[in-house]
Length: 117
Image (cartoon, rainbow, N blue to C red; front, side, top):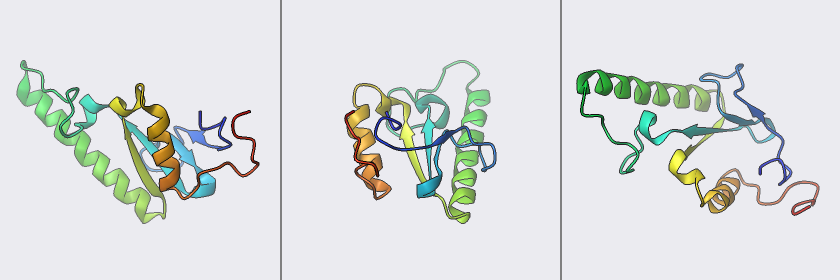
């Protein structure tokens, strides 16, 4: 969808901290697509806690969220804008989410005017 809209990007770019899911180099923006369960999306029904081995799971969730904060801070420190898209936002509402994303990076139309082709 991003490509159709005229955006050029890289995926899982290993040269940046945390290997961001989507990198828009021209806009110095990274898009992190977080799974609601693993990254603990606040208030989301998918961010449930398993009943068995609860201490193990809690430790894993804390490690994940701490790593998310650290990676975000590193990327911002390097001058990158960090945008998080949650797994539950990618379902049927992906177009409004994408439009909001594009507005957040200050670009609403592709450079070459070929949107919709």
